[in-house]
Every structure is written in C-alpha cells, then in structure tokens.
Image (cartoon, rainbow, N blue to C red; front, side):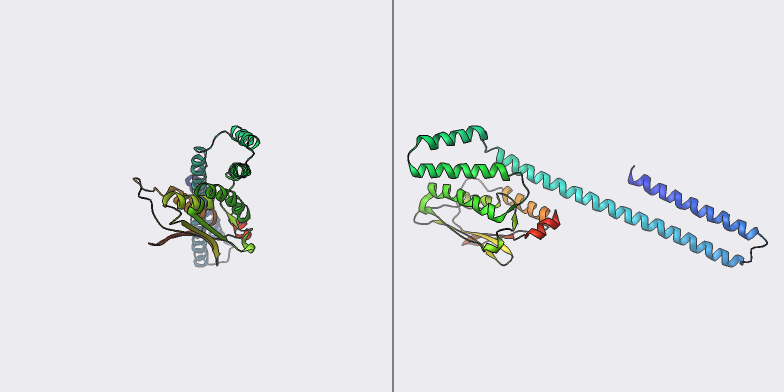
Length: 274
C-alpha cells in the first residue's frame, strides 16, 4: 500500500471519529436528563477535534520522517553496493582463472631450484589468495591487511629493489581495528604508479598510526605522464568509509609529499554501524 493511501485512510478515520463524536454530543444535548451546559459540551467538542487534528498531523509528520529515513538507508545501501561492485569489477579485470593461476604457480615453484624464485612465487600465491578470499568482505582486521601487505611488498621490492623504501610502524593494540580489504594495497599502488622511483632518488613510503588515524605518506616525484589520474580509486575508498562508518578520510598533498589519513575503526564502532 502506498504511503499516500495510508495517509488518506488515516485522515478518513479521523473524520469518521470526529463525525461520531458530533453525533454523540448532539444526542446528549437533546436529552433533557443530561445536566451539562451546552457551552461546556461545545468546548469539549472543540478540544476533541483539536486533539484529533493534532494526532493526524503528528502521524503524517512521523510517517513521512520514517519514510524519509527508510529511503535514505536504502540509498546508502545502494551506494555501498555500487561502490563494492565497482571495486569487484576493477579487480576482475586484472584477474585470471584462479585454478589456472595456482596450477601455474605450483608448477613454477616445483620446476625451479632457485630459493629466491620459490619465495617470490609463494608471495604471489599469498597475495592472490588474499584477494580472492577477502575482496568480497566489507571489513577485515588491520592485522590481516598488514600481513597481506607484507607479501605484496615482497613482490614490489623484488621488482624495484632499493628504488623503493617502505617503513611500517603500527602499534600492536590497533591490530584488531577494522579496515576495508585492499585499502592499503590501493594506496601503495597509487604511490608507486604515479611517482618516479630510482636508486638515486628512491620512493619513500611510511605507514604508521597517529592518534586516531592510520597514516600512509609517500614522497612526491610525479611521473610526467601523458594522462591525468582519474582519482577513481581514492574516490571509491572515500565513499566506502563514508557509507561503512560515516567517517571521512583525509588527503593532504604538498610539494614534498602525499599523505592519506584513515580513521582507525575499532571493533565496537564497526559492529555499531553494521
């Protein structure tokens, strides 16, 4: 039943009750044994009608408020689902068949005797396994995300060597805090993607907690690319934090560096929002 029809039915019910009160009072006035003065009955009738009208107004306002809140929540859910879908589609574009990939990695690990190659293949498998398992989740513990990042960084360091310097220093007490999966990977990937890194001028990235924020900061040496960054990844991350926690991330850019501050969400806060 539409909300307009419900309001009409309530209004009709109020009118019927008001008419019933009029009928009752008119019969009481005509009854010679009824001792209450007509003026008092008229006053009571006016008060009754006022109460009925007030009740009708209160119901309409309350119903519209509930309806507006329901629509707002549905819109939030729709936005979150859209953001999650965009993230999933973005990852799917870069994914191969899991069965084929893991078979390939296992084969490569089996045929090589080189220890470094075996370690590299093992870290690739760990990264891909994490992405497959956790990418569909809304939240993961910070401890799991950092463990994943260590495997991811092993791959990056193997490729870039001393051209990249990364320092991670997060207090143990925040390890059970909640974070959207692949958040740190996205920020690290952005830093690597948009900056020049060399042995003589390495890209420096620091990850640490500062009060109520998890901070990821990198030195700035932008690539002279022919394209402009769309900022889709950061925008999607901002949307997820707003919808999941009603909190905003902070982005600071200077001539020397680029910093992103993520609100640290403890277990109770994440449970409350969900």
